[in-house]
Image (cartoon, rainbow, N blue to C red; front, side, top):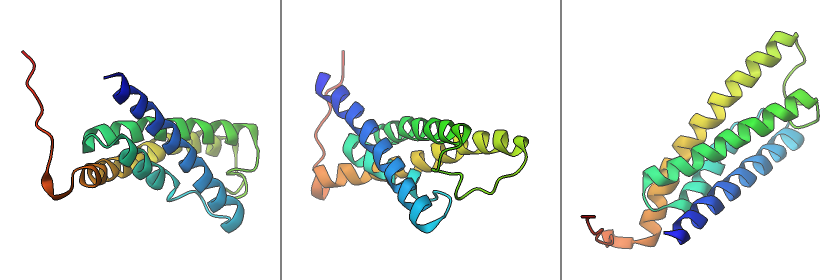
Length: 137
């Protein structure tokens, strides 16, 4: 049980790091809004957490929320992560961007995590040889 918690936490951290690094590359090199970062980070988190697709989706959702918070803090601090890709408009646009990024990162990471969790099960148990779960009394 303790090993599963550690693996879940590691999945969240690695998914978050992949999400941010992928986004930094997308923004700084290609001057694009980070589109695939949350999805790719979610897939990585899902594969690592991969007990089942729901477990992978939960890990990716938490990583996506952390990614949205990191992007929001970066946007508020006016550093170079998203300010190069997002044109500078009125202050209300900043609040709108923060709300949208929360849903955007969370949903894409959740979908990627569900896919990654299913892939993780397929990688760990090929040919459908799933372990039998004992029912708790």
